[in-house]
Structures are given as C-alpha cells and as structure tokens.
Length: 315
Image 1 (cartoon, rainbow, N blue to C red):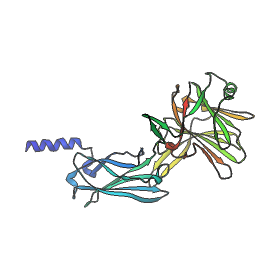
Image 2: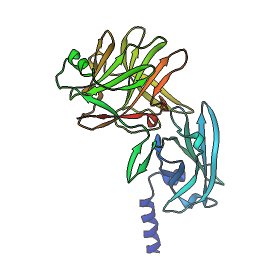
Image 3: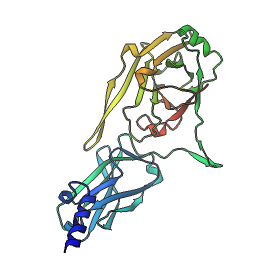
Image 4: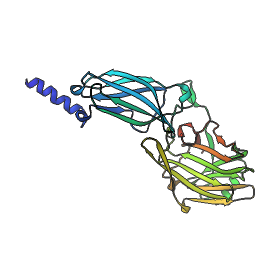
C-alpha cells in the first residue's frame, strides 16, 4: 500500500499543475507557434483517472476570414506520462498558413464535457534547398553596403552611387549600414505608386505571424513623408493586428534628393546590435500602380514574415 501511494504521489508531481481539473495539457505546440513542416504533431499529457473511455479526441481546424474548416480529426489513446502524436498533414496549397489565417488544435474528452484548444498556430516552411549539407535559400540574401561610421546624410547618399541594389515596382532600391544606423536608398517612385513599405524582421524569426520585432518603414509617395509602424496582435475568433507608431521622429532621418531619397533608421531605436554579416529578414511592398502592387521577394506576403527575404550586413 505504501508503495502504491508513493507511486501515485510521484505521478502527481510529474503532471502539470491544474491538469486534473482540465484533463489534458498540450505541451507542444504553443500559442503563436510557427511550424516548419506540413505535419501537425501534438505533445500532450492527460490525467487518465478522469478519462471515461481512456482516450482524447483531437480536431485541427483552420480559421480564415471568420470561417472554420476542419482539416483532420483523430482519437488518441491516452497514457499518464503523455504522448507525442501525429495528427495529420496540411495540403501544400494551404501553405504558408499565417497572417490572419491560423490553425487551432482542439481537444475534447469523450464521455465528458471537458474540452479546450491551443491557438493560433501557423506554418511557414523556409524556401530553399539543402545542397552539400548547406541550406541554400530560394532568394539569395541582399547585400547591405558598408557605409563609413559617422558619415553625414550626403556622404551616405554618395556611397550608394555604385550600389547594385534590387528591382521592385519599377524602382532600383539599395540598402546600407554602419554601426549607427540602417539606410534605405529609394528612387522617386514612378507614377501610380502611392506608398512603399520596407519590412524588417529584426530577429530573422521567419514566423507565420507578425511579432513585436517586425518593423515597417513606410514612405508616402504623395507627401514624401516617412512613418514607422509596428503591430500589436491579439486573437479571439479571429486574429487582429493594431498598428502602432514606434520610435518617433528621433528614430530616423530623411533626406529628399533630386533622383533618390535616403532614409536612415537608428539601430538603438530598433533594439538590436549590428555586426558584420548579420542577417535580417527583409521585404518591400509597393502600393498603387493601378491596382498592381509589387513585392520583393516576389512571393512575399506582408503579414507572414516567414515569406520575406533576407539582408546581410556586409563587411
């Protein structure tokens, strides 16, 4: 009897606090998780003493614009020490999954009223392929040219004269950096362009949902005004993103030129430390152009950082 009692107490210490009250605790994935594969795998622990039929029902649901679609279901036999279970595979046409669309993993205990869910969950598979044991991204990282420390705005603008840059929305854009700031050299937008947004994934997280570290530099073509935005996120029946200004006027400098405009965003306002060959997630979204916006990279989606490209801070 003493041995049985000791074994029971040991089990209770292993199980998470509150497990008996709710029956099931999902330990992985967590809310706001980004999966890197089309396989949905759940790790959970269950209190088998309150499972009438000794099993747990799982249902994976996709929510898109207020509509819910069941992707797959599974009944899983439960064990006291938990389990890791493959629930199903998401169709290739549904990936990437994120932004305002998301998955929920819902669980319920057959023969009881106990139920719960984990959400939101997204999928952002990294684009590229492994060659010779090295990962080669689908879009090679852009080079941010090295600008002399302490350079004035005029000196920084001159440093872009020989920069190759990249093409987006009929413009050739280039980026640069020094230990003080990140620079964007933007030509005067062609007719039809209303705004140009530069997105920075500062942690290079490649997530399925916008996070605190994702920042936007927005250039209004009509007024030649630059603004800085980030997003606060929430989820209930749907995901919401509230735009919030960050940094203020002291966070950047702007110089309008005859053929190009220069934006300088200070690193300390972005909360990161620059160094040689550091990588940052990066994308550009051009609005307007008679209803034909242009993106860089071509497959980038504004609300899914996992679809953005990369910048490398060159030596």
